[in-house]
Image 1 (cartoon, rainbow, N blue to C red):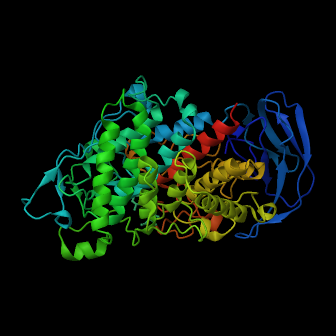
Image 2: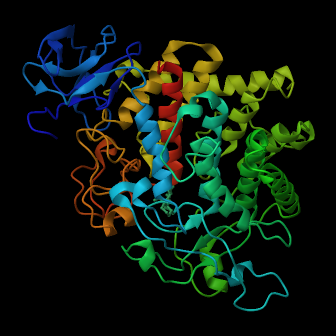
Length: 562
Ligand code: 9MR
């Protein structure tokens, strides 16, 4: 924290929209007033009363809420509580989260594999090319009959998954789906959304240019022989804490399977739908996506139950692969998502035939192993064009609304007044993405009903990510007064630059503490976090967490921005 800033006052360290709900949290037993003062002149702009005491269900700590929604005037402010001091400064202004959304998308540029990052685009994080991935070995688990030993494929580009340098199809699936969805939901917003990347001057929105970088890699992961899709492109063991240009280990693609193939199909179908609108700029790309999607779909129908099980594979084949497993034992949700995307692409309702959409079950928050809700979002988004049956639309709506209503229950009792963190379960590995994905569900609920309570709760979760939480950190690198400085992120560790690569969302509190770092200071679920690069379980970044961050910040900005 900067000097003189009270650590007991927690708020979104970036700011608020003039018209939106504005909430801060004060860790204090004392009742009384709070003041919002002009950061420069010190003049009081607003005076309010702290709420009744709330008790934190995880730590037992006590807090009060400061609501200053009634202050709607642009400015730079601090919140002051006489007994505690001042908060970090924040702004009230239009488009307050646009630079946050831009930075979070730019985070993907920094993750690009197989290319150098010139200073013009990467600033002080410029770096040389690494991981050309133009001669990738096909692992014994992925061999088709007739292929010679040491068979290689070319599989460049794509994004590094996370703090490590491997590229995983399953995790690319949800990431691409989320990024493509924010574009589909707010295409106009991305007309003036510039991330300063090499493609910024072409006639395609930067968001799609970024997505296409990974799409071009994904194509190469499909076996042209049969349409099946490899699980991942990986080193046998994680690289050391070194820069990409210094990484020399051989890389492999491993076993084709049902889950990776269906994720691939969904991404290709969704991409095709969007890229059709850019045929003039990107001739043939949408068509290639359609061909790839159809081939993948057919493979998955013929191979409905091949699952990636790293332990089993290591018993049968050499070399052992010990990087991120992303082993998912069910393809039912991927099938729902892929079928929904194929239906939305082709208009053929037959794709949904024989598929249980499971709308009678509670909505499942999107995660790398659970993607059916991405299919629901796509169906809802395209319901009119597809002339979908009204009972199906109603069931999907009900599922999103029931889930959102459940999230809102007891909001007034929550210590940080956020839906995030009601239960300890929210604090799983990558909990920041739980907050972001809850926010996305709430935005869909808002769009379906126009009820402000959903929108306010979505803002609450963005506030959570930017500082209104039990750790006091803003979880996006490069932003906030109390910022993340030591993410478990090879690029940030090895580059010898003290600031980490900006625009990366830290995983966030995770009481599992699987990394066994010794610097955790708390075991409480919502505080179980350490800003130390040893902490791959609480302080890594990952593309599937950054994507919903882009979505949440961009969607709120599109809705509330101006
Ligand atoms: O996000 C993944 C989390 O759900 C799993 O519990 C965890 C352990 O298997 O792995 C996480 O994903 C990591 C992946 O395996 C390798 N790259 C870094 C990812 C983020 O930590």
